[in-house]
Length: 174
Image (cartoon, rainbow, N blue to C red; front, side, top):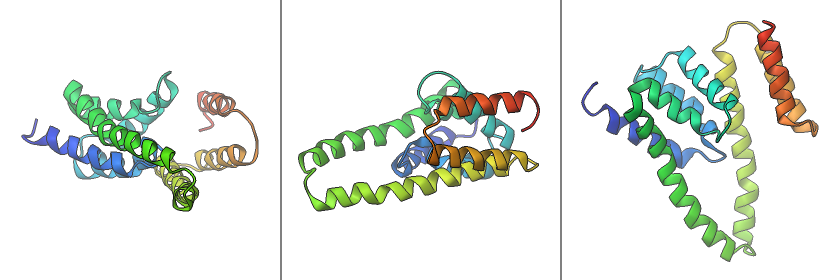
């Protein structure tokens, strides 16, 4: 392993943590840029598989970060990525939630909460684009668009959409 690799990996994920408004999945495009493009420790297939496996597994959605770290550098890599993404976000979320709860009547606090919604939506769209753009063909793009519209406009449970996507994938449509 290259000297300084684990601290660099930890440092990148510390920054990702502070940018991950709406969850770690929102910074997946930047994770892809660093892990696949700059550091070249994962391939596109490994990156996509890490997200798919972790999202399908029971437990928190953040598992994909540990899985990427494990593929990049074993158990120490998993500890570096998971620790890096959890430490700042957890500390900041605790401090801000206490502060915001005490000041929930303030106009600025209400405006901030309202303004964050479009940012989170934009980050999720970017993540969907990165995940679909890596696969050849067009059926997966159509499935992504249909799923996004169904999630937005209906009350269809997300597990139903995941199951349908799994069946379509097993049948070879996507």
